[in-house]
Amino acid sequence: MRQNFRWQERHNTAHRMGYAEKNKNFLTIIEKCNELIFFIKKNGDFIHVTTSTEQLFGFSNEEYLGFNILDTVHPEDLDHTKERLQLVVSSSGANINLKFRSRTKQSEYRWIEGVMTNLLDDSMQSLMFRFNDSTDRVNSENEQALLIQEFTKRNQDLNQFVYIISHNLRTPLANLIGLINILETDLLDDYNKGIVDLFKCSTDRLSETVFDLTHILTLKDNQGVKLTKVNVQKAFEKVCHSFNEQIKQLGVLLTSNFDCTHIHFNKSYLESILMNLLSNAIKYRLHNRQLEIKVKLTRDEQNNCILSFSDNGTGIDMETNKDKLFGLHQRFHNHITGNGVGLFITKSQITSLGGHIEVKSAVNEGTTFTITFKGENVNLSNQNHQPVLQ
Image 1 (tube, helix red, strand yellow):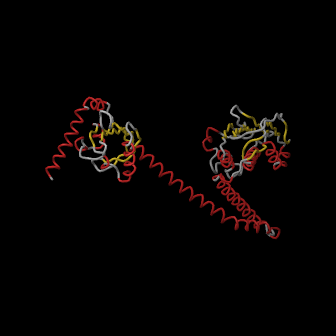
Image 2 (cartoon, one colour):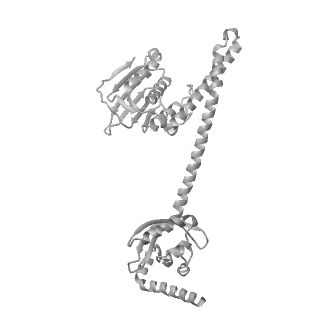
Image 3 (cartoon, one colour):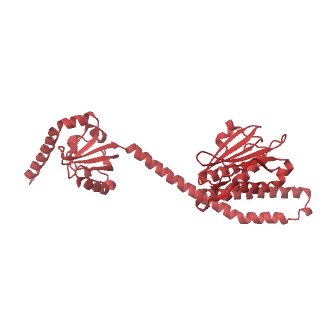
């Protein structure tokens, strides 16, 4: 039995050496190209590997001659590799993509991927696997996937935390506001009245914060956001009506031009966007000149509707604040009260539905917001410049 085994081994070695001699010219060309290549028999036994492959895995060509390719495959990739090998063997001249982890002499594994070609009916009488070492790329992709998974989990935990906080604060906060409103302040002295006023101010700010947290959470989940054909002109007039008294008292000159009257958007989002922009224009006006606000809606060559909202107010130092303009709790005028979430919410509402917003501004000259609304924009109208409210 031992003699038969040794004879078989010598026969196999002689066969492989004969293979190498027979295809010497071809292998010489392959070696000069520094290619990573396995040549294997139909049953998966190695016939020849290139020098580059030896250097990558640490095994010599002679050592590989004692292996079957499946001996080098990572256990987790074994079933998939077997299926792919059976597929390429079953069809003469076939080419299949193959990716698996292959063992090195140091018992480590490297990711390799390439094309296995059936040359059994050719002069090579083998399967040729021409591959690349993709270990660094795959490891990088795996690390990124783990990071994304971790960030997703943290984001979910954060959203849940914010939801719990905002939900659990609503009822006691509403009770506090109700108690303050029914408090008989006329019975208090000036000192205690001042304390109550400060307490009321703090609860109002807390109420705004809870509202903003809830609003931001809603923006993160667009599944319930309904898109409809929205009349921008009517939405703007509705928002202006909310500021009617301020506009009249301040003598605001407000003009609009709606060449494109309708957009495919969420009605509540649009009103919120216009509300924030109009509120900021009034809040950050210059007191030494009349506030002018210009609103224009046009259609571009790509059939998108472009909303331009301009004012001649205090403006923003764009060189200093450009990168944090739409950040959460970012404020640029400390002499005016605010919580710094309006522009954050505005941009979130626009971008969450595929839109885009840009800002041009200069200190003491004013600000222009340009919003691009994507999607199904319909109905053109030839409206002329007209004052909405004066």
